[in-house]
Image 1 (spheres, one colour):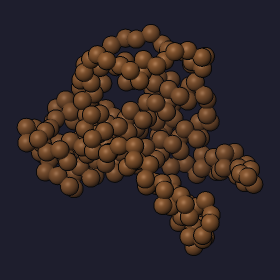
Image 2: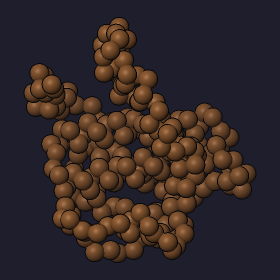
Image 3: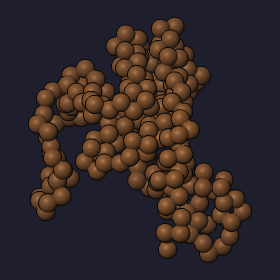
Image 4: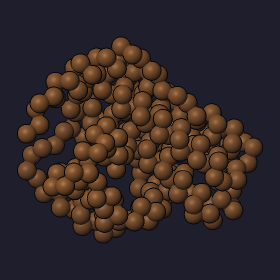
Length: 225
């Protein structure tokens, strides 16, 4: 939805011409997340994973890239267990060996979020406030997305410039969620301290932006049919 809005800012009035793809996209793109499921319900389920994700890691064998024809239908027919009992490997693993500044900055934000939960976690009143917990869930979801991106970048390598730009957006989005948490809800002094510390800005490098434009974006001109 954000991408469509940004593209609309770029193409302006042409986005409203009849019988074009974009005229359809403006209307249809907002339907996808709403038809797939209610956001607040999904985030409420995600919150159940937070404790084990950060504080109870377990070791699992590394899973190689799988693209062979195999029966994975159990993924869609799981019968046992509760969400809160699901265990995860150490969340630091995908960050090992990566020295990209924006990835490092985001890992700092993650560590602050973990410390926030450990030392200044939601009190009884905040736990009962579904809006407060959903806002925290947005931050946690972004952490998980970042992990998936890093894991996938090792299976399907992308340039360091592209990875840096992706995490530039993630750092900014995470800071925006932290600001929302500060400005929309009552927080303790200690909670506000950690949330303010999460308001980090990404590493901005004009050389990386130039390389990204010349190597990743410009070659796409004229390709789309």
